[in-house]
Length: 225
Image (cartoon, one colour):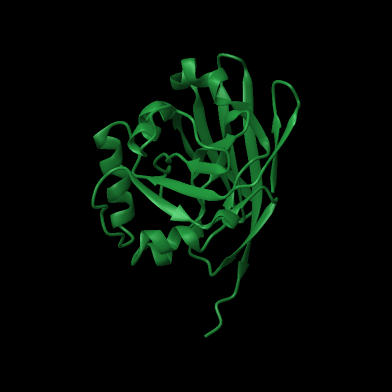
């Protein structure tokens, strides 16, 4: 069970996440999709068969914990809006599609599965932000060698609008069923993909002045052969 805290009412909603989906290659503009594909091709990732793709990940990989454990030093985070279905409607939070880049070179699906997916406990109701969705801004910050640096930054307009994304997922309305969660795509990184000691993700709403954020530490486990 995962508990989210609604920013407007300060109400807590506890949800049993039963299905976790990662929307890959979910850019709104083909040029941005191509940029991300080229970014990953540099580390040997095979281009997708179509866009977007909806990867299934074990539901227990979603976590609100302040720390995750990963195997080896070839993982990194990606800021993503997270949609969560509840019995009070779809919620919006911010999270990270933390991914094993070494595994990604031979299977994107497997690389998604082997790392936990951190998500913040603060949430908005989708119906409160959907009318000004394109005003939202995302950013991520990576702590590398003790220094936090800007890793990703940009508007959500680079990604499919939730209405269109969920339509392509097969839903008639922009509402997930209770227990469903979806990470909705990421932005190009500033510089190169690289591991970090900690990762912070932010979603800002300049219309209301509110923001969601989550920070998690990354503990790297040794690879024993």
